[in-house]
Amino acid sequence: MTRTTPSPERARLAASLRDLRARTGLSMVGLAERTAFSKSSWERYLNGKSVPPRDAVRELCQLASEPEGRCLALWEIAESEWSGRAAPAPAPGTETETARRTDAAAEAPSTVPEPVPREASAPASRDDTRAGHRGTAVAVLASVCAVVVGGVAITLFLVLGQDAPRSSSSASPSPSATGPRCRGAACEGRNPMDMKCGVGPQTLASYRTASGAMLELRDSRTCGTSWARMWGTRIGDRLEVTADGRPRSAEVKDEADAAAYVYTPMTTTRSGTVVRACFRPAPGGESNGKSDGKGECFEGRVR
Image (spheres, one colour):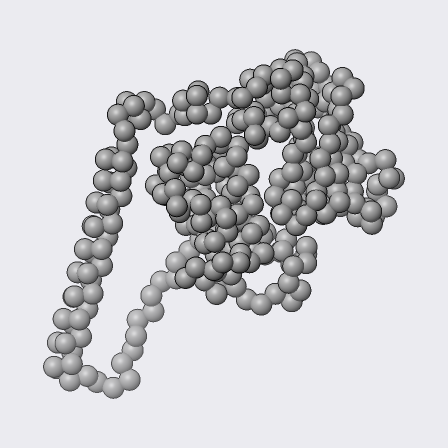
């Protein structure tokens, strides 16, 4: 069933998947070539029109070199809402309830309940028993056939769907597909995802704010740049990164930003440069009086 308006759960998952796709530097066609899912399927997944299979989320995380935990937790929440398994929340949309469901989904193992044998309420006749056995045999045979046909289809897709250059190369993307679009001074003030500098960066430092937002200082030696990112934020939160006196900042502007990663523009750095990030919460967003209005700052050194 297709649903034209994404729910908040699906919108949150789709925003994270779009961010991961941008980090891979792959187009929709590129995603289809590198995964077992078609271009049209990825368009639906990334627009929040449908919930992707769990394997699609895992494959995208692997391509983006991102740990699976957070996205799989978001997937579990979105899939529960989509399938109708989700229980009504006491306060829909609140940060506390969303965090609770995310943590629960992340920690709960994915298990399949074992079938419970049915007990007959009355003894069945011999004819009924034979008919039931025949029906069971037919159902089992149909299931086996479906599994075999599905396996053959997937194998043909993976084998015949590849062109000659891809079959003779490793799974690593070619430089032309994922190489950065800028280096050094040419990257100054530009978006690290758009310029493909966010592929395989190193984390210089991490920080958790008093309001619960998570911050990271990131660096790409391929591009010769550094930047900062934040998530778990509120609308109006602001993050600024500085290196050698060049400030670059980003702000959480809407709910989509608050549900995904938000990046500052890049600033040029080199080995030994000290990069400083300062988080300034939205008005009224200070927690426990730990923010004095000047922001919470931390630093990292480029290696």
